[in-house]
Amino acid sequence: MLEVRFGDEYPRPQGGTQSRHRTGQSQIAGLLTLGCGVTRIEYVSSREIDKYLAGLAEPKRSTLQQLRQTILEVVPEAEQGISYQVPSFRVDGKVIAGFAAFKNHLSYLPHSGSVFPALRDELATYKTSTGALRFPIDTPLPKSLVEQLIRVRLAQAFPEG
Image (tube, rainbow, N blue to C red; front, side, top):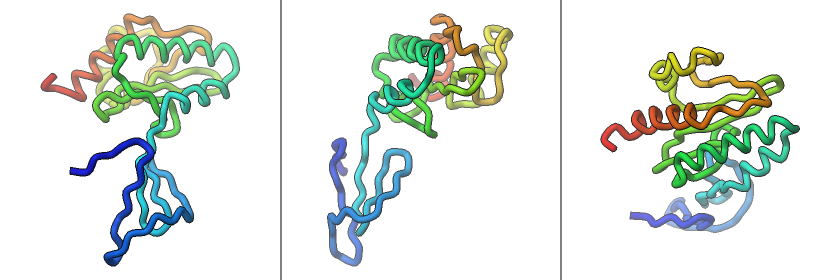
């Protein structure tokens, strides 16, 4: 079994040789493939979410910061990072929540198309699509709703737990 530490490099064999040259980078979901076949796992920390939020104007920034805090209160063990170019929260490697800012609204993202149907009555006053719950830029989601959204998503992501 390969032990992975954040920021460590693990060369992939190419024709029996191993190289650690750093020429040409491409990034895909936290996995960097460096030139000459070197692969490095890159941990995207909460600083990436800090940068995302810092780029937003008020009241979007404070509304999403409050949502972030609520998510972390509900699942304090969640790892923060960026997934699909938006802030996300992972539990045991599975994305269970996320959010995004748009011009005229904010979105809560459950990263599952089956969360909202399970909470149809609770979401009746919100506009939803398969994968996003829209809410006003100046009105945070109630903590009780975020708790329900995460509870449903966790039950789906970890059915045995």
